Length: 128
Image (tube, rainbow, N blue to C red; front, side, top):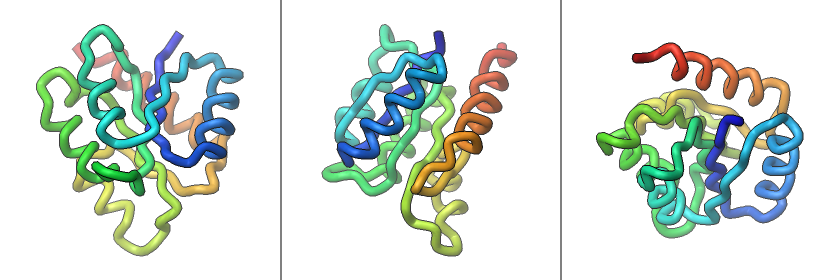
């Protein structure tokens, strides 16, 4: 079972996404803020397959969390999908520049998000 870390401060978004991902066959770990998300990603025994990262988080925002994850030797290979309500021109590029592997907007389109998750976790499986 693939393990997804959902870093999301909004309770309604956390609940909806975690329930739908669990029904989709994923094990879902939850962090309610950026610092906790980064700590969970950096914990070796967690073995996370993918991170769904809200970019507007209290404390350490998603942009900084993505930079820290991609800078860490033990976490740099974890695929990260930025989730944001920001749909302004340049936001996707900003997320990619911060280290995210993909970008999706809220409200979440689950079939599209699941396709992105599948693509990123499959590509991770074939890497040496």
